[in-house]
Image (cartoon, rainbow over all chains, first blue to last red; front, side, top):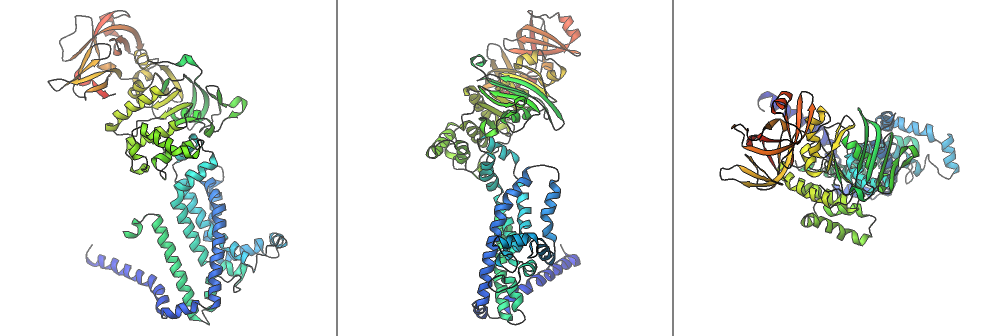
Length: 262
Length: 363
């Protein structure tokens, strides 16, 4: 590659790289690292981190427990309306977060039948931590489901047949053959859902609100502080950048160490 | 030819169903200790028959019974799930679990065995197949031949009531196929259960099975021993498919570099290539010329066998002549040649074919 075209390509790459990395580098460069760490020590920031951790873990647990068998069914059975069903499941992927928030309010908001039933059963959804978990699950689940369906579809069906002829029931085949064989794809899906849940902002804000220690996750805490305490907002952002980078790296590692070394 | 079929009920399958574009309609019986090959082109429905027996495919109508157990009877709404049918199924690409080591693949079939005995039993089975040193390897690091043996050990681990082998040799390269074929023949010989083998290769079927059922478009066209099919094919399709004649013998290298095979039961043939040892010799019926005794022409054919005429069958414009050399052998010629020679069952003749038309396969 030589001449003006080679130069053009190199300039395009340099522009893209600068534009995409500069803001991230700036988060760490704006303030001395010591001040960032100090800002994290502030009570509200720690509350937000702890809440994000708990709600994301709860949402992921729900997604894995229900999403894995559901994805297996969709991937291994052929029936009428299957493609339509998959599209419905994927819909939240392309839904604007504000719409997701409104949709959740309309479905399980305080004045709805389901919302009232949940409250009567002792489960407060709106303006409560449980509501954060619902919002995170709603927006993050499709990321996991999509990957999990693809991973289960990629399994050679004769492996599942072989398991049956070796005396394993369908349930045992699912645990002992399907999940281990699809594991890299399932882990990648988990990481994507984790990233989406950690960064969730719009739906949580609209459905659960932003109360420190109750529904204020890290992204909400950043939004809450950026006008008043920019250093604290930077510090929380730096944590999210580190976690996101770790997730990206682990996805690539799961797909094979080559994905990074190359 | 060993036949233990009279000793008890074996495997019996009857099924009618649609599989893709094929209308499957088969009925087969396999005696305990007997090996029946389902042979035919791809798309004939051979694998579907195995899947029906194993419970991986439910036919619209059918019955499957093995020994005293009824596995399937659609008329009575009976369908035993695959995991309770005790079929040892060897899949075409072996279907080993990539996340488990060789011994864990075998132990997977032993989950009804007490936990403490699983590993020693799995390792013992692998040792029987000469794989003691590879027990901890993952399938990805095994060679094709090793994978096939791990899959065989795994299929036998549950002491199956029937053995189902789907193209057991087709995933192997030519150099490992000979040894694998020998080993498989030993496994089939030692198995006291019905064995159903699927292959698209008539020679492979002839080498491994007691009887061959030739399948096309979902039906069994004809069933019988390899030599019976080659000598008296019921249709042009069977005639074409049962193509090569297979003779067994012991090969040695001759001084001039050719291979000479002493046939089991008498007679000798020469081929241009082939390794010394136990071999199968194959030659196509249309390569074999017949002459009256003492009238064999001094042509370029190196192989001349004194034979007895057993049967004469017309297949379209051709005539198939079943011969005993004393091993069964088939020649194909035109009707006019047959008339000129005046061959009749019970008569004698000389069968000639060129060394170049003779294939020698390790056995």
